[in-house]
Image (cartoon, rainbow, N blue to C red; front, side, top):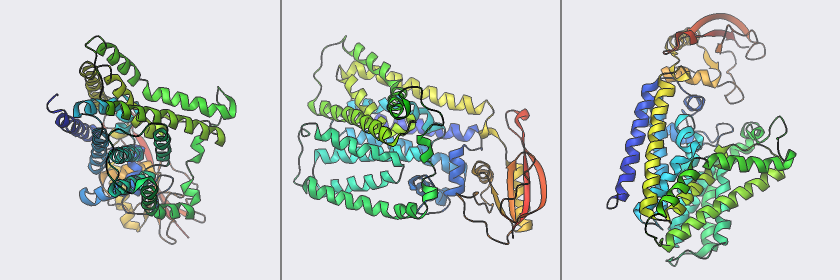
Length: 477
């Protein structure tokens, strides 16, 4: 580790995510909800796709064009993005830390449940958010070491693309900016670049140029773009703090859940390190640690204030991902200040245990127990394809079921149900796939039911889990 600290991390993480790719493909051909949405909606390039920002859809559409519309393309895209996420954080830290310290600090991210488990299991757009948060942090670290036009250009590029990953990306830039304002200048900064005023203007122009197309789409489709706003509010009043202060307590709870695994590891690493010879950490590493942790606390404060003003009372740990990146890395760097060698051994050993536990957990949970990943839509797909061809019909249904059908074969003329889908073409028959025995409610005003079939979808692991689906053909006016 000492001589090859800059090499073991990319190769080790590469082997890990290759193993995750193999396990996921072995588990089964079914899809989770996020994967189903990508199979349905990311087969082409659009300015907007609904309430989610378009960056991950664009990336997935590009991979689909290379590998085809299939589960393998989904899995390869996600695991490549996760590898890139860790490497961008590492490259940013290398501006201030030696390779060994930076590599161990990056492993702190493996103790954030949303990153190490949820992102691997089901997330998609949040994975793009993780990558762009890491990329923005990398660009900031580069600018802090050297002021240059290129650095400001990269800052604007990563900010613009970050805004196209998920809306909560915008927690990170002001948190970092305020944290920087409260600290002395970065040690050893070089370069005679444009300075903060002209450089910031360049970065802002680049970011706006990237954001303008999707922003105009959002303005033209506010009903779709704002569909997720209701997630900020609970149906029932929060238990603590009432309507307004409940948002503050939610932020605190989300932060605790985000770092609940990392804090014991960090404290154990510091305790073990203090039993060895004292060590003076490099001033650059201390400075970047202070910036990262301060940006975490500033960001949490900003979010609490925003939640209070909005009267919102729901915060998911997933929404804290832009702050979890500097927070987890900063906490790991803090542990290493007590003694890099001894603390590093604790963090590395615990990270290996967590990574292997997640890998085995994915295999056990989804490979040996029934789930949507083990549902077999092959027979349903073949019959739907046959009926669609015979009737010249467009296939519709819930996105979860359409995605599962496309995972079997992408040769279906599918359209998501409104409002996410396009309007049904008038005069063309509609083939609707719905769970259960059918629904006499027409999919569109004036539609007439022509026929219905009931087909089973078996489960590869548990035959008792088989579910019936109704395949209906409707004539549209």
